[in-house]
Amino acid sequence: MPGLLSGPVSLTVIFLLTWLIRRSCAQIWTDEVSDMQYGRLGANVTLACGKAKIRTPVVWHLNHSAALPWHQVTSDGSLVLHHVDHSAEGVYVCHDNQGLLLHSVRLRLGHPPGLLSISCQVPNHTHVRCSWVDSVKTFLPPQYIASFRNGQGWKPCVVDVIHKHCDIEDSTFWQPTHTLNVTEVNALGSQTTVVWLRLQELLKPDPPESLKVEEVESHPKRLSISWKHPSSWPRRDAFPLIFQIRYRPKGSEYWSDVYSEDSSIVIFDALAGHVHQVQVRARDEVNSDTQWSEWTPVSLARTWQVSTTPDPPEEPPPPEYIFPFNPDPETSTMRTHSESTLLIG
Ligand SMILES: *[C@@H]1O[C@H](CO)[C@@H](O)[C@H](O)[C@H]1NC(C)=O
Ligand SMILES: *[C@@H]1O[C@H](CO)[C@@H](O)[C@H](O)[C@H]1NC(C)=O
Ligand SMILES: *[C@@H]1O[C@H](CO)[C@@H](O)[C@H](O)[C@H]1NC(C)=O
Ligand SMILES: *[C@@H]1O[C@H](CO)[C@@H](O)[C@H](O)[C@H]1NC(C)=O
Image 1 (spheres, rainbow, N blue to C red):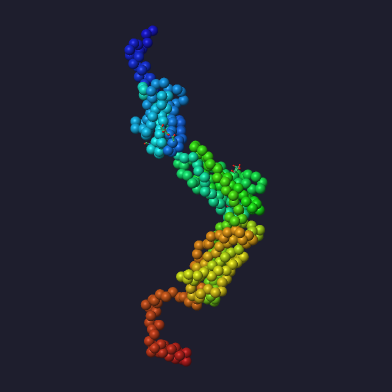
Image 2 (cartoon, rainbow, N blue to C red):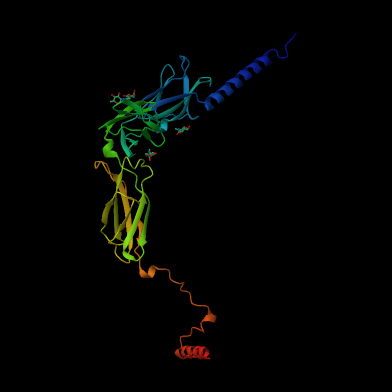
């Protein structure tokens, strides 16, 4: 039975089909780059045209364009880019001399990690948070592995990659020093930074909360000041805090201060009739090697004044009441007179 297609026509159709298949493969491959290659900025980067040895000459393109950064194609079809900078980043494809796509690869450039600059905050006796900043801008996504050593061995420090910090719960404060390792890893390498910490010296409570300053009725030189423990400071009985309170009349350059173990005091030497600024901060009471918290935001209050008792509203009286309160002495006298007359009568 003779086929539907025969002779030169079928050959043409087969050729066309092959070409179409090749075209569609090329399209898929260009859009979905399977390989990612990382290179160091400033170095020479070699991109291989697929894994198989290529015998035919190949052509390379970057981002669908023929313009390539300074380059050289080796005899096996690899592309060598010299002294690359960010302009060499993008999607590279290599074709054979008939236009068949052989390989595609996305090139990303950057630097291996450098040392980190690490600082730690210790807001209470069971929590340590260490944050870091990179000394090298790597341009590549990092991963961090962090661990912490007390006398009992290494423990993980739980990493937040986005905010570049890690948290340790349940630290052992009685150890004089602790070790923290943070290893940054990216596609081009890794670097470990080691720091030694003295938690005692880093302990710095959060500032006290809910600072309230009020006048003391009938006492023009007193102010009543109260506040709450920082909410991140648990176990007040086991770890008492000492508070420093400072105050000054608004506009004055000099603070007066006073210390307290309680969370309220009354000061007796305020400047009568003035608005005062007040702030409080806290520190671990037992260990003076620890740090003072930041000051609370300034709280303002005026001392008690006679005139601070609520005044009647100072609106002008409505017109119809003006007449009876007319301050004309004669009218007043007459009114008194007539009232007396009335009483007598
Ligand atoms: C990069 O290649 C050029 C040319 O082959 C060579 O002179 C240079 O030393 C290479 N640079 C590096 C960093 O390898
Ligand atoms: C190539 O495209 C990528 C985005 O896929 C872009 O970041 C890069 O700058 C482009 N490179 C060039 C040389 O146009
Ligand atoms: C932390 O760093 C020290 C010193 O480089 C090293 O001896 C130790 O093995 C590291 N520990 C971890 C868990 O990486
Ligand atoms: C210690 O401080 C941290 C950070 O503010 C807090 O999340 C944690 O709850 C505090 N610990 C306790 C036991 O309150």
